[in-house]
Amino acid sequence: MLIFEWDKKEINAQKVKDLAAELQIPLPIATVLYNRGFTDSANIQHFFNPSFQDLYDPFLMLDMEKAVDRLQKALLNRETVLIYGDYDVDGTTATSLLYLFLHEIGLSTCYYIPDREKEGYGLSKAGIDEAIQKKASLIISCDCGINAFDEIDYAGANGIDLIVTDHHEPAEKLPAALAILDPKRESDPYPFKELCGAGVAFKMLQAFSLKNNIPQEKLYRHLDLVAIGTAADIVPILDENRVLVSKGLEYLNRTNKVGVNALLKVSGFTNKILNVVNIVFGLAPRINAAGRLGEATRAVKLLTSFDRGESRALSSLLEQENKQRQNIEKDTIDQAILQLNATHDIYKDKLFVLSGENWHQGVIGIVASKIKEIYNRPVVMISTQNGIGKGSARSIADFDLYNAFTRCADLLENYGGHKMAAGLTIKKEMIPRFQQRIQRIANQQITEEMLNPRLTIDCEIDFAEINQDLLLHLKKMAPFGPGNMRPVFMSRNLTVAGLPRIVGENHLKFKASKNKKIISAIGWKLGTLYEMLVSNRPLDMAFVIEENEWNGIKEIQLNIKDIRYADE
Image 1 (cartoon, helix red, strand yellow):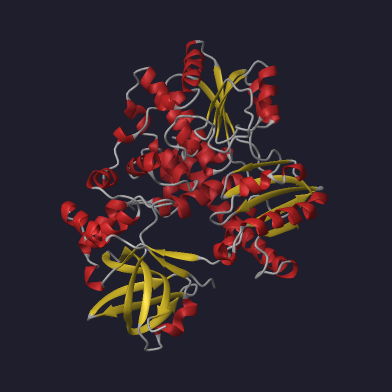
Image 2 (cartoon, rainbow, N blue to C red):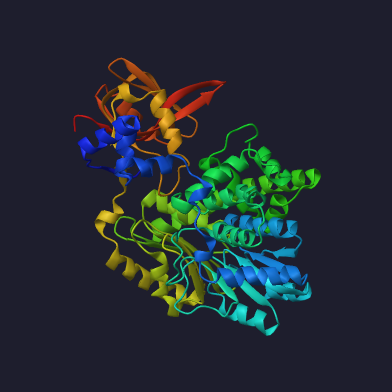
């Protein structure tokens, strides 16, 4: 188990008190907001009340005029448009969004999602051949295409225009597409750079709607898909993404999409108010299961379906495949950790490279994430087959994977991604050289301090301050996610009321107490800390504050992140 170092932020106490008094909000909430850069009342009111008015002008993005004009031409000339999406949640939700909206306005549309194992990530010749076969004269890429030089040239040679909508890091040179929409393009003036693929696709449709006087509500009702894609892609839930997710959750919680409702049902979310956590750990794995173990096209088919029978069948199939994915994932983790202990010094090595013959390509990214969480090291997982390795990597804060892969480009067949997550293709015989070089890069860039996991404490809080008013204001800070995580509080000199229990898969269940105030607490997978709870010593605890509902009864609950002896 990782031992966290607690980082408690310093505050300007007087400014925080003034802020709390001016806005009439609890002092701990004012402290959290101040620590996160919200230092004046206007910004905080803006933050508490996300609005469509906060969305940026889509025409600020480079090539937006070109893209909209080409869409208008396709509509006027009754052309067929093929939407080409990536096989993950972001790609399939972006594809579904474009397909539904463009179909509704009368454009002849079809879609194509590549096979993860046969074609890999990004635009493929097979997908363009599909467009040729369907006589499509325009392809719109979703969540891919920014580095697809050869494929875009192939499309052009066959008389097909290509609009790229992507959010990944571009290379120094750009492909010869008709229009490239990617806020990460160098010198792109678009003010927000962290949109996901579904977000970029939404901006294109927003621009098209504005230019053609289409009521915005016609587009907004598809924000349920944008919220799923944005939350699942782990981009910062700040700025424009905060609006898209906040408003998107409102649409998701009242969605009339038959396929989406079928997905909600198999995920156990019927009659439940959904949040980002439900998307990331409930909906996203089931949507991803389609592309991980089979055809991701089925995810788009489900998300765009208005046939109840078809939706039930597809959602049930994804549920079965998600369970199968969980079993494969568990086996792969076991194999990877065995290999890790045999081939690496888990205390000295600053980056792990693991490879296995025929590891399932659909789960290696998840496994890389799990191993990274266990050891707090960047992890590259490579599955080899017929002499070719396909890899998926996950990083820790402050180590740029994409940059590291770029420095190894001569050893790779292909690569892509961003700072925290990236993928690669490599010849099997090149893996040892790649491992040697990327570990050397990691040794140069990763400090010992970066390897010590840190728990950021947003605010120290007294038990007397934990009440329903505080919980109400915490809810106003939602939606939570990267860039706006649930605040972590700490309290000192707590005791345990009654006897703690270990429940489920090594979870701690107990009641924390101070000055006669008792609050229920749960520590997920923190069973190893049980001895501390029965030591009769005062404890400091770090936790997030949430509302737990059981059998119709709601209560405040502490979700424990770490525990320390108060007298150490």
